[in-house]
Length: 195
Image (cartoon, rainbow, N blue to C red; front, side):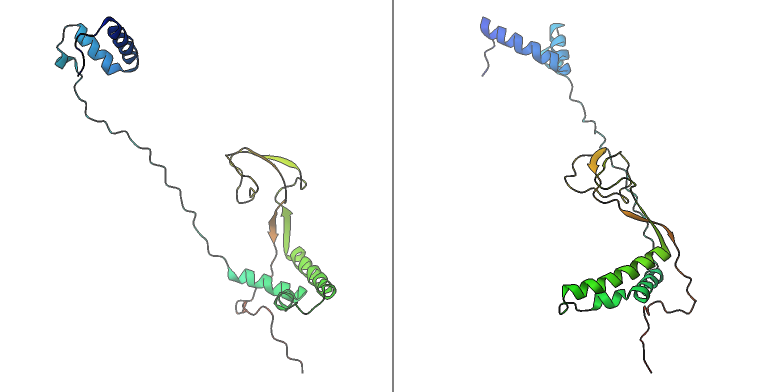
């Protein structure tokens, strides 16, 4: 039960508390003013207000990128070229457990030379970044995340400062040969029958 006749010190505490409440609460300050102007305590209380719904921001829907169908013929054609000029599939499918490192190295050198020749003949390949590996770069907001992958301690948002650990590769031009309409691209290398 509260004391309706507070002591002098009680009134000082009430005045100081009321002072700060008036500064921080507009409705309370209006009620105190109404009391001072002669309103009854019931009239001094503010009328309850209906809760106004606060609009919740709805995030804009993120458009789902349309997926396009990859042409298996082009991939099969490339495999065929790598097999023809580098014996790539023969090398990858071979069980190399029984071979020495020297034998594997000699075979890898031949496969490497053939694969490199196929890539240079049918593709123009360029680095994604022109700077040398180890160079310091700054990636501004909106950088192309399909061309640049962040690694290491990725925290926060752009701009990012880091060093190039791999320059990346992109194809500038493709020069695959045309296929005859009835060509079966699933036959990467035909079987060979010696007579």
